[in-house]
Length: 275
Image 1 (cartoon, rainbow, N blue to C red):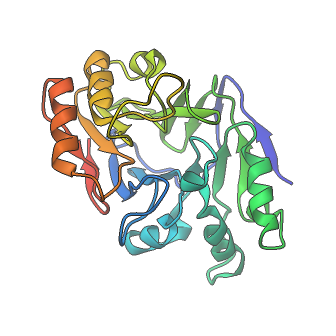
Image 2 (cartoon, helix red, strand yellow; image 1 turned 30 degrees about the vertical axis):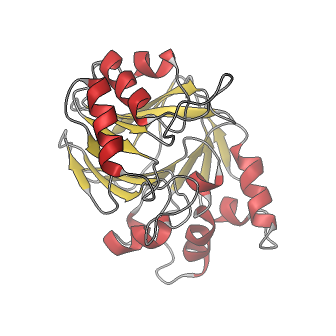
């Protein structure tokens, strides 16, 4: 097993370093909730800054969508917000491709996981008779949510958010300065995300529910709650994600926009967001 723990600020070895452009390009590979949209994929977002390529989450269906836009061997880093299946299941086909596919000999991509994720990934591999499948294909780094990491030419930081398991909102920004991209991960209503996303250039925020959860714990947001979080954070641009194609997208968008007090976009598979 090859695993490193995080530190306060740490540069991760990489082969994809290039000049710093200070701009971000985010491709929506999948935006579905726990069940895939027709022809879609669950959570997966390709974040590129010049020579650095990071896959943020890798849920079911994402690997095939990745292959439609990029050679998977060009991904230098994979970063998990949390290890629910709809955010990590396609690490299995990704690992098989890296292990048995053509074009071997390249440096293994880095897989950054939160505490506890590695055990779940081993359990997934056991279903294929190989508990160390993912560990054998990726260079594993376990991060602490308190870490501030440098991943290629991007700086990453995290904020724990309330969900049914430990989950972390993620911020990525160019190390040389530039726009901030904040991903809510899966979460229920919380002030931590508002503080974490303060004045962000782009907030990609989940909007799974159509109605607020009944009294008690909520692990997801409605569109209106997502808009309210974005308003309180002062986000400059807001994109809803993690909602089903079975919902009325227009109604979701309108509810979020009313709460936000401005225009709100909807994530769509294959869409490219540039900052």
